[in-house]
Length: 467
Image (cartoon, rainbow, N blue to C red):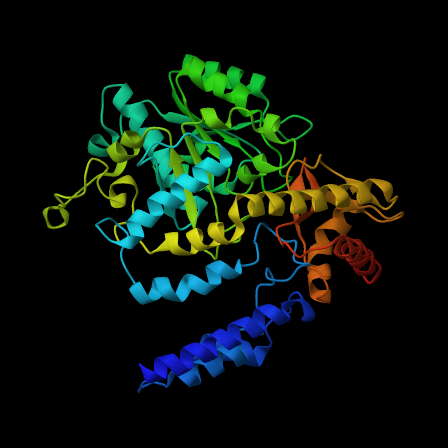
């Protein structure tokens, strides 16, 4: 234990030094060939190495090459900096090293509180047992859609778990062209088939066209198919658009469909000043996927599946072998009965620490700050003759493109993200929006300033001129 005490203290110093100095370093830099060889080509040591040596290797070969998301000028994808409270308690969770499948110990009990807090933040009704933490929204989505699939089968008088899908009318799910790829992956993993995921058109604000949704459902019913689920977005990753959730909920109710909301990134946007009406209908969803490791900054990976009816998820997943029977589990049973994981890590501790450290007011302050940056950048883009705003700013994402005179905007904006990243002074990513090459800046860092937005636009201009 003496070696652990000494190394632990050193690890804490290294960690703090790294976090403190992130803003003074390049946002990102490629891994040099020599370091890449070290990272990928090591042989397993024949004998064990000292803890201090491991720390020195991590400091020399790992920490200098981060993804970049800890930096205040990282605006790529939807990757937040780590909240310090979450970082602090991660070793404590590892020291306990429990399986949070269930049982009478701290991990599962704390998870109940954390899930309740998350549901309360976004205003989603959450009965006990109606939620669990996952590795991320991708697995949360699998849980929610598997629950929807089983509910639809049982409603039709058969059991998808017992019988499989063969010989049944194809189940059909509806998502927009802006829906996240995890929805498509989940449908494919669950045996629904890619061709049975319908792409619903979007309006000029990149939100689901509800009239088109109604028409598509009616057509599929006439064709003898089985519509079972519609998935709306509470903040898409391309533009941050929030679908008309209340209208979608009306359609789902009219046709008896499961209403799922992908709020992995954007559901917390409901806390922003004046944002409530935009999210109307979120509380009517049958399921909601959240990612605490996005806007909240909980260290990766921590997602959350929230369900209106806990028994529906249990019907989709519960399988308790004799060696795991727990007479003291109570009516809710174990978390393992509500999803695919049996051994489950102690995700609740870092989530609890992050939320406790921020408090509700701190979460709201973070959402307001980052959303305000996105709106400010949107205004700057609209005022600049060489930039074009591509979508209304709804959350903390600004979608735009650089349109200097004489340049082909498609060619230029496809090339710009890599060129900007390579300069090392800021980091943004590209996408396609409405069929056009686009730049997107996602704001999640509490320390990002409006001056960083000036740097961003100037770096884009310089990268364009250097081509």
